[in-house]
Each structure stands twice: as structure tokens, then as C-alpha cells.
Length: 304
Image 1 (cartoon, one colour):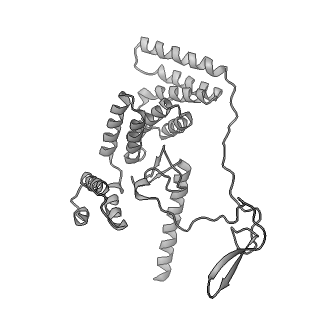
Image 2: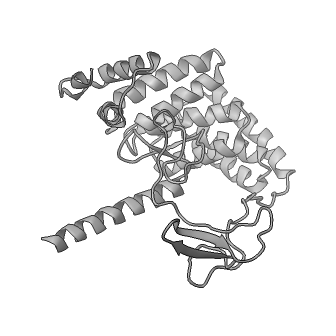
Image 3: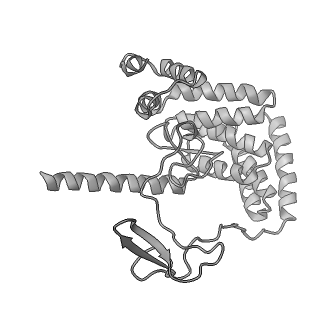
């Protein structure tokens, strides 16, 4: 089976079927064998897979299966070619699902990301601004809601919709604008997690508390000891990991940069194998990746 996977003529769908068989039968594969199959399917963007996933999501959407549709739209976003209309359409679909699930902050992020791409069909762009206005209204962002709804109204006038359709939509917009005017802007509540850091850093051990010391003995090797009382819950060390890895079956569910669960993933720009929790995390990972290969090239040049 492993030899079959490595054949160049094997297409992506064949490999997906093989992986499914391995999973269903609990076959013992080495990490390298799994990686070979995974890379075969995920090292590129595939427009065909994106379209298929989105079409399946639309079918689930029509019968009210929001969670199933969300999963399929996530898949479409991951497969979609970077900065394409296919990506924009899939993001719009996912934002709509988040609205149905009343996850308005996630919907807001998706809609603003969508607008930043500037790839959504212009004739339907008024719908996106209307949804954004509704989402911001739900989030008590009155002035931002009015701004988005007003933009929707301006774009609506440029569409080829019938007068009756325009009139009906304008009435909806006016209703939402009236509601938004009654809502004072809510101050942002970032709900940031407390910053993890030691109370006082050790002068010779970066990241370690001053209450720690490093000792060495022939029998134990190098080890740390407390040189004063450590309170329950007190942070004694913070440091970035040397390396991290996400379990194979969780790769598309967790951020490749910070590892948190990502129900609304942001895709990699170059492949379909990893996702991120935000544009910021994707940018951080990209910068580290570029730095790593720059340092690698410099090291190889120095060795020549």
C-alpha cells in the first residue's frame, strides 16, 4: 500500500481513499508513511476540491444542517486558491453560517476578511455589507453598523435588481439603520488572557524565576531546585518550545502557529495541509518560516 502511494501517477482522490482505509482499519503506519500520503493530497491548492466542498456545503445549508455545512465550507476555504473568487465565495458562505449560529464575532472577522480580498462578485457586494451591518448591530457597534448598511444602500442602487426587489431591500436597510441609531457604541472588551510571566526573572536564567537555581551532579546531571518558597499556582518558568507538532488527525482543526483550536480556520497561503486561527498567526508563522530558510541558506553557504 505504501508503494502504491508513492507512485506519481496516483491522483489525490485515490490517496484520500487509501487514508480512509487506513483510518477505518486501524492499520499501523509510520509517521513517514502517513506524511507521504498527506503531502500527496495537501501540498497544493485544488480549485476542484474547493468547488466540490462548497457545493456539498450548499446542500447541507438548504436543509438547515448548519454544523455540517460549516465543516464543508471550512474545507472549501482550505482548498481554495489564494486570493481567488472561490475563496471569497466560501468565506461568505461560512460567515452566513456563523450568523445562523449567532457567532457574530466570528462572522464579523470573516466578512471583513472577505471585503479585504476584493474578490466577491460586485453585483452581490451589497449583500455582504448588509450582513456586516447586521452583525455589527448584534455586537452593539452602532456607528459601524450604520456605515456598513449605508454602503449596502449605495451599492444596491447600482445593481440590476427590479424596482420591487430594491424597494424591499431598502426597507430592510432602513429598519436596521433605525435600530443602530438607538444603540450607543459599545466599548471594546478584548477579554485578553492574563500574560504568563514570572514575577521576577533569574539574572542568569532567561525565562526562569529568581526562586529557581540550576544544579549539576554526576548522578543526576543538570536539574533545577527551588531556593525559596514557591506559592501554589506561581509561575516559575516561561519559554517558547524548541519544536511543536499537531497530531495528524487534528492538523486542520488547530492553529499551526499557536496550536489553539480553530473552528474558523484561516488557510495557509501555499498549501492545504495547515491552518491558522487568525491572519496575525499566519503572518507570524510565515515570517518565522522565511527566517528559518534564510538562516539555513546562510549556514550552507558558510559550510561551502
